[in-house]
Image (cartoon, rainbow, N blue to C red):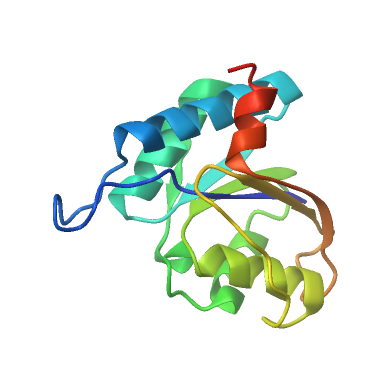
Length: 163
């Protein structure tokens, strides 16, 4: 499986809106990331997001950018910020037949999922940022058996998009 991990775009402060939707900057970040994905020839068999508004919005913007059906986005609690990484990985294993899966999620969850797949536990430090993209390849999504293919910060995704 090609597992793509992307932190949602920048959100408005909780004081401004308790649901913390994407800010204008966050929308632009994810649109640029989606444009870069399309330019790189990246497509998805499954897009997964958390129930949080900023995650759902990020998944929807990527879906629009890469021509993925919005109605097929899978929402799950297992990729929320504080969800245990083994639960997320177990959930993602259910897509074993699918080759390319994107998770539009949160920190620290994304970093812990990456750490578990790359190092077998959560001691590997992987730096995520809003709108960046990470790809980990793993035949069976087993702890320690993942291979880091790339980790591209949002600014580089924006450059790859030609923006």
